[in-house]
Length: 456
Ligand code: SF4
Image (cartoon, rainbow, N blue to C red; front, side, top):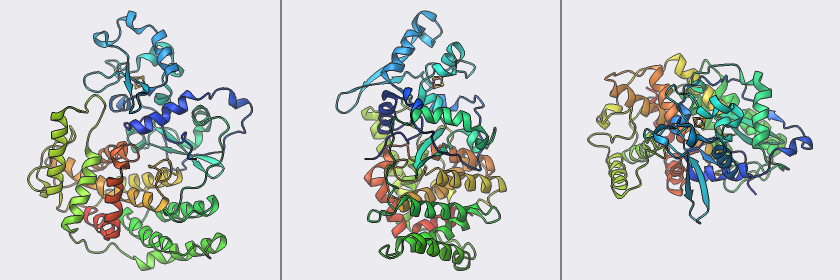
């Protein structure tokens, strides 16, 4: 059975949040005395510390357990007059089968009810860090099974993560372990590795050989990220076509070595860009539009009018003519065609950001299996690769919004924060339709075209 504890932290996805709630509801304190010490694998290339930007408190719905609800109620906020407009602090909702679930209330702008005017958490300020809901304490970390151990990944929706601010994560083993021990359930058992394809199940050892080869393929800092993605696509496509009846264990390692060595010779440079087909662009706009959509619980309009608006924006995205719909406060209604020109070479800073992003997600098993809608490794990798053109498309949108014809590092950084807020967490991206969209683009050869088209 798929374990549930690996999904990290705050989520705008009700499904993932309910998974988190189940985890939080399970007893998790006492097992430390008898459970073997967790084997944590920390990202080797990432720094992070919280810089109190309060971004996470403004854009996520925070689901809490009954125990946390009671704790918050016992803090007696109603009598304190500190909560804006004396709002209720906890909202009770029901899921599809009528089961109660609890979420922290949100202010009109989507901020958590406990966020004060200075951008600080009232619970933290009054009762200390440990009094906050666990979801707030986990973010931006995410924990996923990796062989015998637990891989630690991070969410790039946090600006301190994208900017690589703070201490190296490898030097924060103690702090990260403390959080991991709160999240990983008692008596956990090693789960099977994510499938390679829907038909092929490899061992953890073999899966990790592929994961390590992916990480190495993306590591070279002198090669543009677009070229690294094209080379990775070249060899993973051949791995996908391999007959695994005979190629296992050592022979798989030899094959990986052969293919990754051949990739730079087979794909020496980034090919000339060609405009992607109309169908590819339509599929891609619908995907990238989903990433760009700003959905917080407070801002989500579920009324008939709100649904009409969503339908209208989906129609606009499919047609690709006229103006882009208003999907995000930082992105204006500019002409679609304005995003299709040449926007200049990626800065060194953006190259470094994409490389770090891809490697953190791969090292952290944050792209397939339970961390990504339970899909297989190859499909998850393709979805991760599409993050590159989707981010570049949104970065262009931001540049055009600000009347620029070239993108700057800040466009890319902010676009990646927008995209990674949704990647693996938006319920829509996990639907059959969205996943089919990704496989169709890959099968039609559009993934490489889109990478080449939007890197220029
Ligand atoms: S409880 Fe505190 S840390 Fe959690 S979202 Fe609200 S303000 Fe932020």
